[in-house]
Length: 132
Image (cartoon, rainbow, N blue to C red; front, side, top):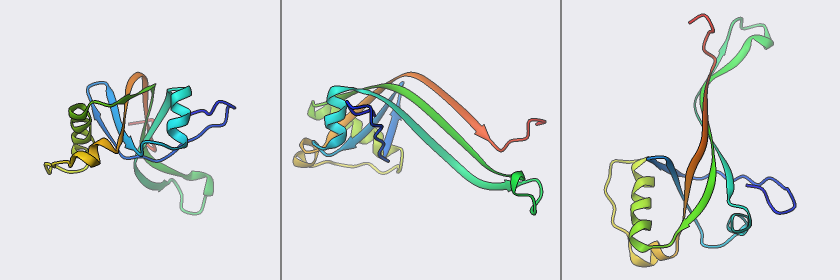
């Protein structure tokens, strides 16, 4: 996110992914919501599989990380409809567990659901030999 004065602002968040959209959740108010109400453009970065690798244990410059990353750009819209919020929460939870959940009305009404439709996406795999 970028604040109106140009200051970048990032926060780690749990997410779900379905179709061409990311889903996130947060409190109803706060700095991120204020920023997004003025500028809904975001960039999401995801990383996984962090393994330290090297070509020679005594040569610092030969060290690297084996990992994968995804960067996605889009605009945040907020979901306000109760049933749509429940669907989004299920997408988020399905990313972390196979368990089915029921949600209380106050919990759903008090959460802010973000939907980011992806406009651009790129990915990279690090630490893989160019010869493979």
